Length: 334
Image 1 (tube, rainbow, N blue to C red):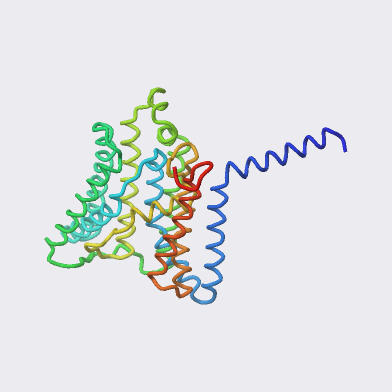
Image 2 (cartoon, rainbow, N blue to C red):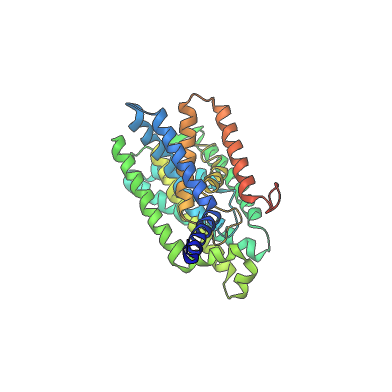
């Protein structure tokens, strides 16, 4: 065999293994989604397939939208543990304002108020940690406690355990509603992809996650881009809260509980590196959100008890964290 042919084949094998090594988490993420989709089709065959498909889309819509916003802060190596409590307060405010004003105008005003509040909280969360030199999780912990108290106070002021939106904001036809949610997810995914891949916002947030010191020395304003990253999450939180409201039409003291951790799991399942950096991708949000939702649906359809469903999720999460964050020559995370 000629030496050039042997050399070419060696280069091809080297390139192939290099590609696999550099995209291991992406391949595992897509493989996980494919497995969940196959299991979903197996355990939901027959008349209930379309009904459960619609249920998956409705559940995944909130996760997808929140995860799309969270990509911008996770790419910087940050996180926001107040996300669930924020969603709870936003939904309650939309219901209270919508019922007070009445009609479609009330829903619009309620959404605009919560959007302004979400953007303001994002700006505060991003700026305070920089000015005070605190880890971002500390400021988000403050917001978590603040919004937890606000959620309880708002519900106590109503004298009810749950409140309901009096206006109808959800299409009566289930298929129409499903298509509407798919359209919202697709639109936000396109917008998120544009800003994350083709603007300074995505480029600089990834640079901050890769090396904050190098980013600062390169002239990147940490305050500006951290604030904008958290505001992007705030925008998505407001939209996700509205989608959640259309899905349930009600809110209570426990609304939004657990979303912060769920979004973290979604992003990790989608292949998002916890430390952020240049390997962060917007696709992690969608892949992870649908993988997580399909996993919940499959386990429930298989008849796994709720307590065991949460145990399986926790086990999968632990395994993925160990695989993605372990030391190069060790077992424990970095």
